[in-house]
Image 1 (cartoon, rainbow, N blue to C red):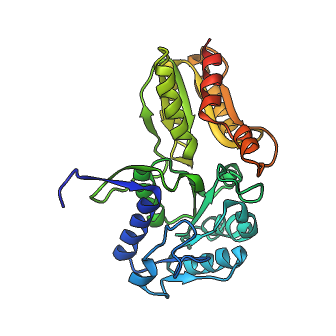
Image 2 (image 1 turned 135 degrees about the vertical axis):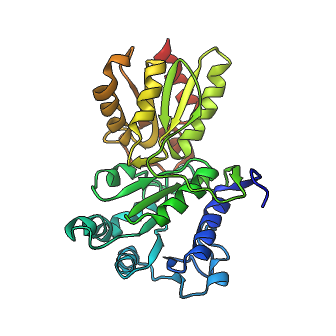
Image 3 (image 1 turned 30 degrees about the horizontal axis):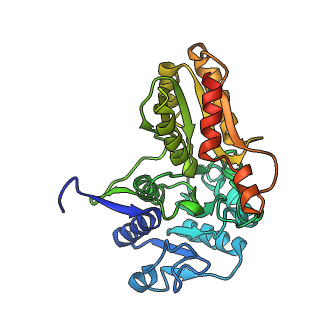
Length: 329
């Protein structure tokens, strides 16, 4: 394979590639979830996997998130490396007992005698008119649980490399994708690439303001940076890639350069993970800040079904541009 060659893939294709590569590499990797076998997944991430690896390793499950998570937990304890898909992030609430009260605790409570190589994949976010019960961004819930790692890729290259790292990790990983971002395209190396968990990436260098964002809103922030660059405003856009563990050092290094911080996310602002980033930056590099940090997120309400109202609630590029411009004025 030609070294350095790149492919232009959608997020769906990048995730499918990661699963296929890891299943070929390690026969203990299995995939399970609702409609992920014959159908190939609601968003197409598992298309073709059952044909290649068979129904024993790519299992269609009953419509029970509690059963999926519990079965995956048992498989991980039994020596397999399960990747369980929960069709919507909202439904992680049904699976929370197995993930939060069991998977997150086993290594600690067993004194390290048990490994928990479990990945729970789930699409989150709105923007598609799927209403209040199918549009939430709940990443902050899981960053609060010791023992869990939380990953939220924003571009196809990261999606593939981070998923491969998550599958190889001996700890449970909640891997959250954005349902409205599966068709987003980007360059992905043809050769294997593993992106370590807990390492942030500066997606755009700048001098005036550090903007930290993740998942789909990271790409919206990059669009905002292009618009503001035409006005002479230079944004440095930092993608944590994993929220737990958080690469605070990279964020603080950027803040030391720009002197300002804004955190942008789709989730509800109150109790959102942006508040944790702001708190840690204020605590660790207060002396580098020229003004108080800014947070941009959704208001404290369910996601509406109405398309105009949904667009009003979820921060858009225009919203981000206006808020950042005012912050720097």
